[in-house]
Amino acid sequence: MSSSPAFVAVETPKSAALPGEANRLDLTFDKVESPQQSASKDNVGADGQLVPMSQLFSYADGTDKLLMVVGSVGAMAAGVSQPLQIVLFGDVLNSFNPKDDRGNMEEGISSVALKFVYFGIAVFVCASLQVACWSITASRQAKRIRSEYVSAIITKEIGWFDVNEPMQLGSRVAEASVTIQRGMGRKMGDGLHYSAMAVSGIVIGLIKGWELALILLAFTPFIAFTAFLAMKVLSTATQSGIESYGKAGAIAQEALSNVRTVHMFNSINHFVTKYESALGLSTKAGIKKGFAVGWGTGLMYFAAFCTYAGGMFFGALFVANDQLDGNNCQGSSCYDGGRVLTVFFAVIMGAMALGQAAPSVEAITSARAAAFPVFQTIKRPSLIDPLSEEGKTLEEVSGRIKINSVSFAYPSRPEVKVCSNYSLTIEAGETVALVGPSGSGKS
Image 1 (cartoon, rainbow, N blue to C red):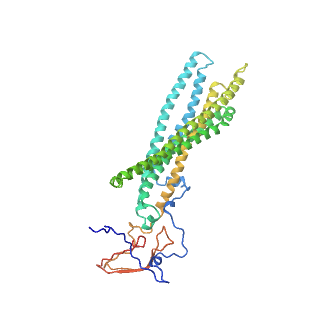
Image 2 (cartoon, rainbow, N blue to C red):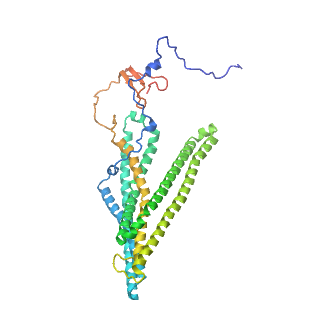
Image 3 (cartoon, rainbow, N blue to C red):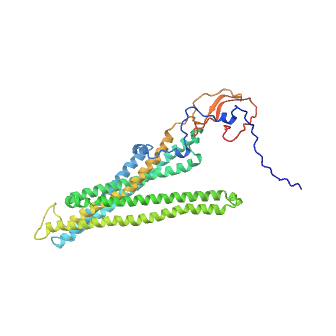
């Protein structure tokens, strides 16, 4: 048996360039005059840009507009009903402290109880319309946007895919569609709901007792800020956890879809370690989320209890001035237990609603940001539309192909010419093979 090796490493032969003669690859990849900045596949988005609200709902038809109007009315009515219930609670408190005989007490409580029943029915109807209408119209519009987005992608010219990573387009369509649907659906209704609750709560407090309401309003920025800050950190941590789980899922999918290759190269431990590393990010996000819930809730309740203390102190002071020490104030401007309770909880509910509206505002902003590149892609016309019937139609095709002095550069690398004054003629029936190193312009 010969001792010579079974396999011999060889290199592709290359002709040495003569002195003063440029290499053929250098001629092929010569530089373009006045080169422009290459478009990176990783920087094709438009960070920080938002679409207008009118454009976000530009795919709504007549039915969708009706659903949005009904859903908006239901959301605002349901929001206003919450502070109005505080007024009924104030009437209940005054009914438990009657100034007349027992008959008036029973009559007052029965009247308030009946109003609560009517309120319950109205809130059920309005809240149902809010959720149903906004969810249905969001699904309908998101379906149209997704369809237009996919259609716009598949009809783009090949050069567009050179600056947009094709492997990411599928996940980009799914992620953008979910984000847009979330922001223009249930979260839109919730934003209107909490906004109406905040405005109506503060207005009712000012009407029932503007002095006490102004004192309580001095505390409301702290409550709203703490609630917003907690929700902000919580949503950020939640999104980080979702992203880390997505990365871990991608690693698992890669390993399972190529399980034979993984076993062949004995890469099981490698993928296990990689998967555990990805899950470590979700663990950190979970810890951050737990701390956000803890300190955010504690800080919010601390601000709320400080407000309670100030409201109770000044409320008791107003009641004492109007009802004690021989005073028996009568009229709409006089403070009693029911009025203090109404003003107190109406203003507090309005302040809490401002903080609760923050996640909805964030979701709507995220939808507008996600919609910008989507609408940009949809509106951009394809340079070569494969579905278009326009153009010249050849009556007869002989099969002879002639390329004369063609120069070409990829859109992602406009400063590098792949083909420079390239000419080629292929007669009908000929079989021609183009060979060359990777990136030499064969495609």
